[in-house]
Image (tube, rainbow, N blue to C red; front, side):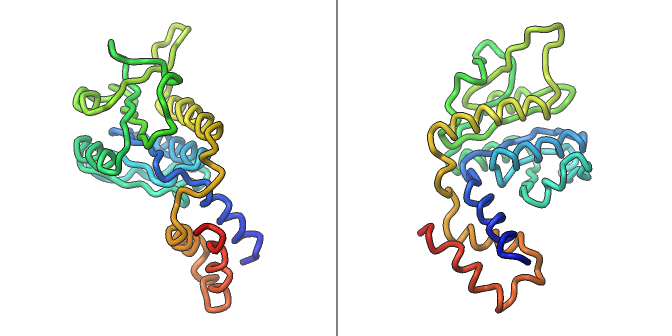
Length: 210
């Protein structure tokens, strides 16, 4: 394991946005969930929440480009429990849902702790989930179709969140604690590399963060 690899892992983790996440409600097509995870990794999201009818985890598609290795997927038994979980950490919930109260997805503040709630491929966000959300957002559509594929919608909204957070300087310093950075670095490095020889280098990675 080279120093360059360790530095790459640290650089990625230092930009992880601890207070930004996605909540996927019953997104049951593996390639869609995989694509959402890939977009999450791209904008610095380290944890994604999912609600599935069976309570299981979909088999990941190759389209994720192995994003499931770098993004934690937390599965919840129901949407109420999932929303309660993210709100308990102080996050607002923005549901991609067409309603009378919905606003343009670019009109909300993604620099606050928040979760983007997305519904499944057929029915979208459920009425239960919509009622639990703090705000409904929509992506304006100018063509004949009324909605985007769920994974595409996720990417559109998440890159707006990234734009706002970049402008606010939120990627300039880690949101993870030094202990979290060290712990995740250890998880990401192959087990064979975490030895007495490598340990001092890992510890040094967090010295400039405290």
